[in-house]
Image (cartoon, rainbow, N blue to C red; front, side):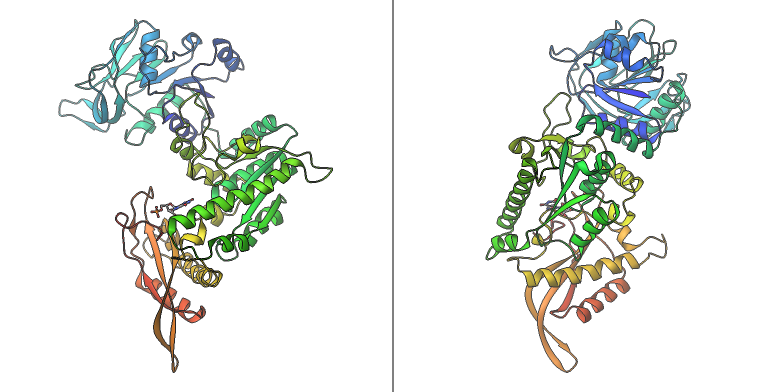
Length: 536
Ligand code: XMP
């Protein structure tokens, strides 16, 4: 195993992710664990290496952290990254000075090819035969004097000591960030450290993660009861499946059906969790309540607020009931579980070590654990989206569910423009199901992938305007829908997808023929920005 000591950098979990990608078990712990804790952690003989993460802090600020000194006395390899390297240099007798200039962004680093860490790893070679690495830098302070026993391993013009190595003790430090993808050889460098220098065996798989996580959840929860808000989305579904694997019937899922879900979505969620996994799920059918509150409201923000507020109300009432205890056999819940994943943790600023846990603001049940006096259980907190998906598949969730496009919390409420009405929602659900079905059917000849997989998000929008059409001998006067399909990697910017005409033709033909009440289909050819992905 590899131990990652976290000094509070936002990208610490990326280090863990890279180690997992190398199929090696690792754990992230705060940098201020005690010497004794580390000795104890290492005593089974399985600890093969330690990585010191970066930080936002400067080593000379009084409040900042040092690595436990024992890290350098165990006789195992240590890699310091950015602040981690500075801490290493400082604690082993070198000198760190606060830089007058912050260095942030890409840099080309001269790599001294002789070290075990960087040997034969380079992005390009200069005419003089110098191996060069294109890396990502983000630091203000720098090492100005190496500790005894160290040699320079890498340098740039502005940062002469950008990498240090004491090969005898197998201590390495890099000023740049190998864990981010901007450092092109980053994964190769971390692999070299973890597999080559630490000598770990690449035999860790997602299945192992499950047993580790299950063990952790059991220890944390004991015999207490847990409530989880199940939305049918990837994160809450995977969290539910994982927690259910760990504690079975001690978990109760609350699934709030606000009437703005996709076609058959509620039934599918129940079928999956109750039918297949035999989990306890309480389905709260709150469609009427939601639609009642939405009646007459057409402003997008007002709609969102109402849906969010009602959601919390409904969930809270149910959770309070569960907390109080449903019947004699049920002791009353002590925990609220959430499918918070690592990007949510970063978003909410909770990634810095030792900082209080905060919950992302747009999370539907944010703030609830405090209000309800429940403890928070977040087993996916350290995982990235694609890892969560992989975990979901490993837990036996269907591939289609786990690789679904994102669906906004307010659901169809923001895909029916203006006032939300049940009739509109019913029409939209059927049209949208046809669009999604055809996206899943249509394969791209070149890649062999379906258009569902080739798009990041696709859906149908209901426009509450009528247009004239003709069907058979008759004139029709019916509603319009817009199809939306985008390609994006981060959802901050997005391009409209160039769907094949044959696919659009099929979808349009089917919607107009099969969904009485819609006689016109349009395709949205706006990119984000300036348009957004959703229409409201
Ligand atoms: P926009 O429309 O802002 O959408 O370009 C970007 C991404 O965010 C999703 N989205 C939401 N997700 N609650 C959510 O959970 C919301 O209120 C919400 N609004 C937008 C949208 O579907 C897209 O993936």
